[in-house]
Structure formats: C-alpha cells, structure tokens
Amino acid sequence: MEAAAREYPLQDLSAHFHDTYGQALANVLACLEVGIARFDSSIAGLGGCPYAKGATGNVATEDVVYLLHGLGIETGLDLDRLVDTGQWISSVLGRKSLSRAANAIAARRASAPAEA
Image 1: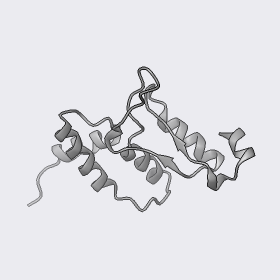
Image 2: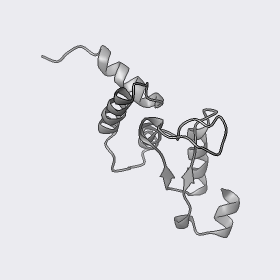
Image 3: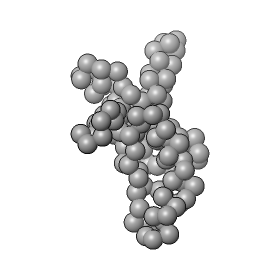
C-alpha cells in the first residue's frame, strides 16, 4: 500500500481484505498507518472470493469498527446496532458470525444480569 500511496492520492485509495489467515485487521491497521482511511468490509464477515481457493469471508464490519473506535477514530457507525444486525443475519443463515468482536459482545450481553 505504501507503493500505491506513492503513485496515487490517498483519498483515491481504499482497501479490501479477506480474513482467511486471521490477518485482515493487521492489514487494516497497516493501511491506517500509511494514511488510507477507506475500507471494504461486510457484516458478520459474509462473503468470499470465487477466484481465490480457500478464501474465507471478508473482514467483518464489526471487527473493523471495534478496532477503529478503540483507536479513537470516529466512524459514525453504531457498533451495538452492527452487532445486532450481524447476529440476526447469521441466525437467518444458520451459521455463526465470523466477527470476533461481535461474538464476544453478544456473549457478554448474554451473560450480563438482567436489568430491573
């Protein structure tokens, strides 16, 4: 991405990562360090790639937003609503969400005592 940033204006660059090897968030962070601020992602990590054998889903939106918020970067996105949406669509599809952040948040919610 550093090479691309030398050839093209940063505002024209964006990144798209699959999380096949669990490195998508590391790649997002590396791009942020170069100055790239636009990323493709998908709720619950849905998707894949018909051209790359063994490629898993896209980086989960919930994971990217959790990272960005943790870094103090305002996204304008509501992480709780993203988690709700990802958990819902995953249940409709009969699969577990591929978002690590969303699954952790959902588990924490499920174990929290009910409010009176």
